[in-house]
Amino acid sequence: SPQLGDGRALLLAEVIAADDKRFDIHLKGSGRTVFSRRGDGKAVIGPVLREYILGEAMHRLGVPTTRALSVTCTGERIMRDRMLPGAVLARVASSHLRVGTFQFVALKGDLSKLKVLADYAIERHYPQLQGRDNPYLSLLESVCQKQALLVAQWMSIGFVHGVMNTDNITISGETIDYGPCAFLDAFDPSAVFSSIDTQGRYAYAKQPSMAQWGMTRFAETLLPLLADDEDCAIALATAVLNAFEADYQQQWLILMRQKLAFTTQKAEDLALINELLALMVAHAVDYTSLFRALADWLLGQHEPLRALFEKDDIMKNWLERWSLRLQQEGVDIQVQATFMNQANALYIPRNHLVESVIEAAEQNENYAPFKALLNVLEKPYEKRPGLGSYALAAPSSFGDYRTFCGT
Image 1 (spheres, helix red, strand yellow):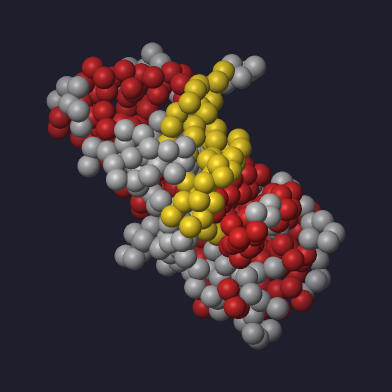
Image 2: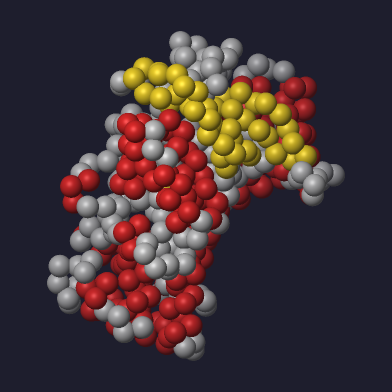
């Protein structure tokens, strides 16, 4: 398909900030464009607020992301599964160049235009590559490295993007398009939240392989620029793509070590991490809550961890081995607990909270819950009085959660 997306996006302008950084201002839901096909090009308040909340949360969590500049209510009523209030999102990004952008140009078969696009991407996002012997191969390497790190960050915080097609993979390495996305509640590698992902293509555990798939599609577009000989170009691209999995694994392991207060590298770390994840799966433990509970356990506060498991002795063996591993760090327990709390968020945009905010806006035009949640998410790692309800896992009544892209 030479044309991706739903045609709701409109690039307004490029802004050059005081520090000479460039940003795109982009509308989502402002109406039909030439790419809208049979869609109305509109957006409704729920998905727009979701994108605002999730983008701001990811920014505060330290994950590269597009951000919301504003939400504007249009006063329209728009038909989706029912009549809903219309809204327009103004989005800011370092650019909106995506893998899909390169596919669109490559499929036209105009090599000169493909070169212009690649040169512009290098100039805008990777100027250090200019002057290289093969800058386009370096571009592929750089974008792959950015994507490996980005997905490792998603995995470490329990984020499920939900629709990792090439239209939603940026060249800059920023998270884009918070449509059918969600955060894990109970840890489940097969978790899928998108209502249209019936095959589990974009499940939580499949995100690294889907990122590599996206990078393969990007590499395909660059082949004519990598070398004059096609076989040589394929060999160069394949070598870069084959390194993706190891690069991702390395980045993920760095982040997971931080979550468990490991500042050094030991051979047994991976097995210890994987065993912890297996325990979480077996006992349907809330992913975000567990790491904060482990920090509490270090300080002798055992109740938060005990509350996550039905039996006290389930974690006994793992905790003993973790304690021995921490002793090898030679660092005070208080310091280790502090380190963990700086690496593991207490407040995330939990799915039931996001849905509550959306419901208040859709049904009552009440934006106070939305503003309150944004305020909490501004400091995701800092425990603050009166905000205990925002740190709680979803109630059992929340049930099977599904998200929608809003088109």
